[in-house]
Each structure stands twice: as C-alpha cells, then as structure tokens.
Image (cartoon, rainbow over all chains, first blue to last red; front, side):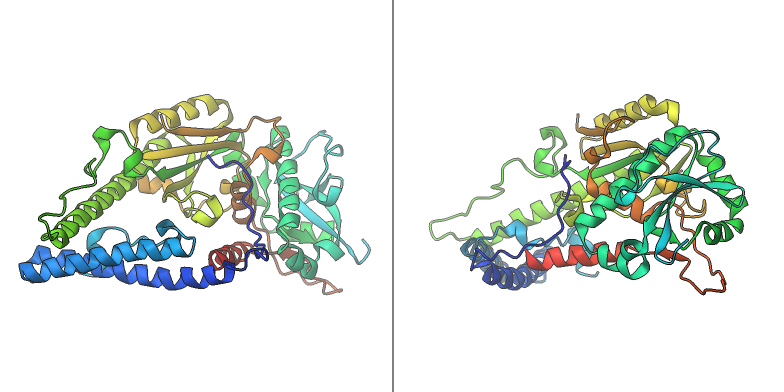
Length: 98
Length: 276
Length: 66
C-alpha cells in the first residue's frame, strides 16, 4: 500500500558517475529485450505450428536460452534488473498480430 | 478589485446559509469567503495574480512542491465545505478577475449546476483501485503457473534437448501469465459491476501509470462510486467482500471524498451502463 | 484477504491522503467553468489550466532518467 507522496521531481545523480551510462544501457537493453521477447514468442509459435524441424526448434530454443542468460548478465553488469527494463508484451497470442 | 488581484474558486453550492467559513485557510494562506453568484454561492479566496495569474500559474504548476501545497489547501477547503453543505468542487486553478466576472460565467450554467448539486447532495465519493496480484503471490490452488519452475530439466550430458525444453518452459510461463491477466481483468469487471449496484452512480477513470501510482503491478480498475453518506460502512463491507472473492486482485479503497468525479456532466463516462 | 484500506475520516488532516490520488481528483475532477466574457477591460477572466498534460510530461521525464 503506497501511502507516501510520490516524488516526481528528478534529481540527477551527480554523485554517481555511472548514472548516465546506466541510462543509455537501460535504453539499449530495453530494445534488445523487446526483440528477444518477440523472437521467443515467434519461436514458440513456430514450434506449435510445426513449421520447423525438431533440429531447428532445438537450435532456436538453445540460442534463445543463451540470449536470455546473456541479458541477465548484461543487466547486472549495469546495475539494473530485468524488471527495470519494464517491458511487458502481454499475452502470448495477440502480440504477433495474427 | 485592483489589477493584480484575482478570485480563486474552490467549490459551488446552492446556498451557504449562515455557515461561517472565515476560519478556513485556503491557497497561499488566503482566507476563504462566500461569494454570491447568479443565485448560487461560491467558496473563494482573493489571490495575488503575480502568483495565480495565467503566466504565473503556468510557471508555478511546474513546481511540484508548489502544486502539492496548493492542491492540498484547495482540497482542504472543499473537504470541510462538503461537510457543511452539498457542493460541487471546481477544478484546480479556476481563477477569475473578479466576483462579477465569475457571476457572469455562472449565470449561464445555473440550472445545470443546481441539478448536479441535487445529484451529489447527501452523498460522498469512494475510490476503488484494483491491482493484479502476481501469479506467484496467489494461493497455490489459484495459480496458473506450475509451482516448479523446471518444467523440463535439460536432458542428456551434452544438454541435448535443452533448447526444446527451454521453449516448453517459456510457453508454459507465457500461457500462465496470459491466463492470470485474463482472470484479473474478468475479476475487475465483476467487482465493478457488483459495486455499481451498490452505488447511486459510478465513473471509470483511466488506470494510473506505475510511475504515478508507485506500484508496478498492472492497475485493472480505477473507479469512483457515489454513495449515500450514511452508507460508508456498508459500502466498505461490500469492497471487503469483493476482495475476499477475488484473490487475483488487490483492492484499494480510498474515501470518503467530496464528489470530485461527479461534479461535471452526467454525460461523462456513464460507467453504470457498462456493468450490466 | 487482500484489501488495503485508506479510510480518511473527516477530521484527519489531508496530508494523509496520497498525493497521486489527490492530484488525480483536483486536476481532472471538479466542475470546469469557462466562458467568454466581453468586458470593457478585456481581461483574462478565467484561467483553467489542464494539468494532465503536465503530469504526463513529468512522468515521461521520470521514465527517461531511470
């Protein structure tokens, strides 16, 4: 339950020299995360539809798994969490526009 | 009125009677007075246009400390006034050059405003917000996601099949999230319908963004209900019962408020019709 | 039971009210009284500022800097 006033005012963090870097990293990683989620959903869809072979599916899945792990590493490197990237593509189906 | 004085309006009432409002403190520590206007009465303060004139307001409203102070003072006058007589809050930053110009504007709206006062008289506003509870925080029986995050450990020494099982796992998670969201939305719809039947009127507001609400969870409902002033406990009990019935939602009740959401046209977002 | 309640009895100071809920109400609630008045002095007779746009821009700023 949030009861304290929400402070909207932004104080730039002059004491933290990494804050600008983190801002840029956050932006870039957000885009990468968006793409990762899109690719993942598309892969899941293709496996469902049976339009890829077992080998292709395994390779897709494996690469996506590695990408997911890499994203965790990268976000941690910049002092961010995966949640900070604030991407929520929502339900599985409608996003891919079918 | 001298050139740099203006009139800040707080609220409109039909007739303040003998009520003394001079003890109230308004915006910028100004005193509050009643101003007759076109057969209505307006609660007002005299303000300095160097702080509250158009250009100054545009500047000051960007200062969130100033805005907070003014908003709280504005609300305080409205809140106290609403206990003395039925009133319609006016939107923040309604400023006139004089009582006379204010009366001239109100003259054209008298009947409409009296009708609105009739609708809100003896009633208060309650706010209900509903957040979707993450699947993991719901009671085990309600969860959509398999409790074990495994869903298929990597198979084989070389991790063969690891890719496929990753995809399987992710699909299960995404489906669970989708189901969880669907059920939260359905729950919010049901709660709103239920509360509408208990209220004289209702308004649906856009959900607050997480940046403003300070809560990362999706806001599924942001509604205002107009309820008889004496029915507060009953309404609060209904909300508590709804909370019990919907573990997929976290309900937040605020109130009683003066009728901010019901001061305008009846035509705005008539939420009651939607709820069936 | 997942009900969080913020009942504000009549005599509790308004400082206890969450700012976001207050601003939502005073900025987008309340009756809007506007009108074009012709006065010999051609004053600005009414100032009603729409502040939702302001809040939206502030929250956008908040997003950019995190």
